[in-house]
Amino acid sequence: MKKFLRGWVVNGLSLWVIDMLMDSISFGDGGALLATALLVTLLNMTLKPLLKILSAPITILTFGLFSMVINAVVLEAAFALSSGSHITSFGSALLAGILLAILNSGLNNLFAQK
Image (cartoon, rainbow, N blue to C red; front, side, top):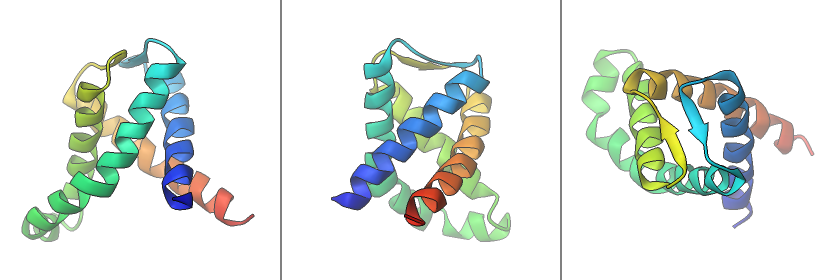
């Protein structure tokens, strides 16, 4: 449960920063941001591992670069399921997925040091 809550907080903070950096992503209000962060967390725990298994051969052939596409698909799914949040294109989702991975990595390291 602690890992889930930390993931939700980290995703929320990261999505907030990405919203400030990118015009192609928007949230209607703080509730939409929290709901999208919750969905990203849940999809990362459920859908993402399944997609990784199914796409393992292409991920190996692309030397791991296809994992960025998986991140974008998960992010687009979360935005599609959350009302009040909007992402303009798959390219925006791809860039946001890269930024999300970088920010989440840094924030998880920061929280793990406590």
